[in-house]
Image (tube, rainbow, N blue to C red; front, side):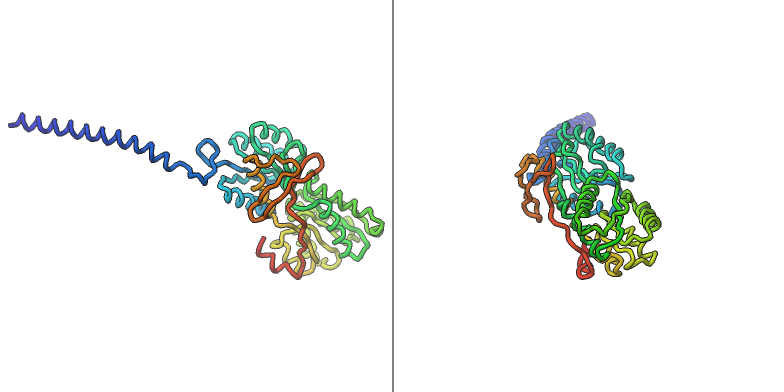
Length: 360
């Protein structure tokens, strides 16, 4: 009886083992099918390695509100298109720091790279390396040279920006007196181009009583921009107007003029964020200023990157991009290269700043 009981127990164990093995084999097959069914859906854009395509952007430096909005707009477009957005910016606005980041992104095998340059030429070897690795490279806002990119996304016509800023400050100061420019870095492509057009506008005989005394550089750093503004006021006691074509610089200058009680004595205009400049416009320290929407600059760049990766454009004149909510944009000539223009700068003053200060 005992032997029979042992035999039954053994037979039961063998049957259980066989059943487990059979289930294991069956589960293994189903596991493969399940994994396949959970792979990215057709609507998800795949990079060929089982994950989403990666679209990167490198801004000039951290702590820049304008740059944060620009990257936010880029991220919105990229994610809207089903990709992964990688947002990067160095602590200091230098080409060297950006080159390190470019090399990191090449190693990560990103699909597209949008560059806001701290220097138009110094990034060329790194960006050429990126393009040889198959990365689609574009610049936005502050351009790299034509050899370092496939196309540039420009916020507005540089000539209109430069001429408009001079016309604005001259109106503010009553047609005569000393003016100064507080720029970002001395290598910033967009800033230098705007300043070039400002100087060309000043060549007109109607500005014979207006004197540009200095172009100062705050390096898009708040503290340095404050120091440069203070230095301008000290060095040129008869200064009547400041143009700051940088969101960091104009906000810093607005604070200095406010703290020193110089409202109406030294006029201020330039390019600023409504959220940062509202108090100075409302107080009259800055009668008016200009800008475009940095969210839209980034957003447009995300769609341009998508078109480059898909191959629907190559960056040649005449190429057209459908950019989501912004509609269709066309590639046009830009010196030795090409660009896509967002639109004209917008004027912010006391009549409309309340409507915009909560937007960006």
